[in-house]
Image (cartoon, rainbow, N blue to C red; front, side, top):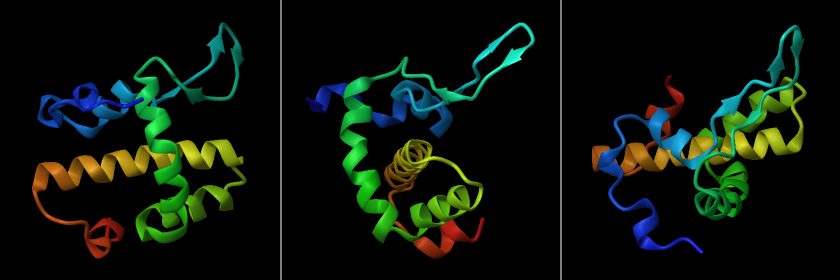
Length: 114
């Protein structure tokens, strides 16, 4: 499934946006001329990473206060379940990137202050 060489060194990603795009969790608008459809995740990235992030995102929506806040905000905006789960996957990946780059453990107060 997800080998240690798949992600390798996270320092090679300049920002969390690049990491999210590498995983294929970035939104991609569906447009053609005047037609503007719903945005979807690009799925052009690493499918093994998306598979590995799915279950941790489900658990994080219940127990992680930062991811829970994202879930609450999106559900208040009447987003569907898959959209909420993909946003939780993206948020969890960004949090992991921040933890590894800063060297500090997760602090919900700092994350929720923004």
